[in-house]
Length: 111
Image 1: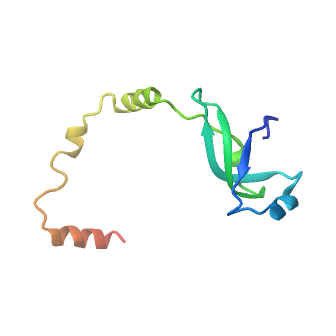
Image 2 (image 1 turned 60 degrees about the vertical axis):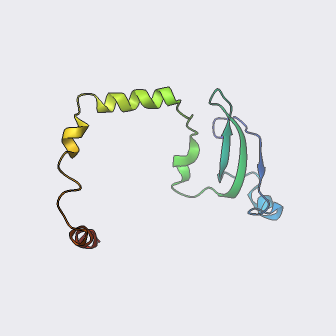
Image 3 (image 1 turned 120 degrees about the vertical axis):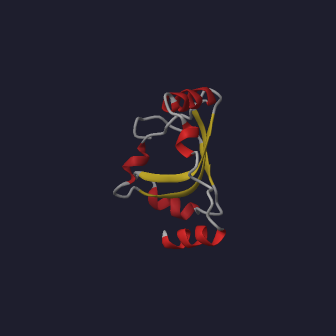
């Protein structure tokens, strides 16, 4: 990886041949696949499904985010919801007295 770390993995030969890999040896690449994490949140193993030469715009994929715990997600949601009255935001807005035809017409008009 860009920071010098290495990551164990395997290629899925259904998607990538060793001959394709030969052309990419020593070059910067972008890898698409499934990344498995340890319980600590650290990446542990990568199952590559696509490996291609680095393309302009692929810089966004240079960083591996660590997954958030359920507690972290709940804390973020609670802070976003603080002071909001969700019931008041949706009360009386949907579904109303509209017929199914009126709802379908409104959906068609959104296209």
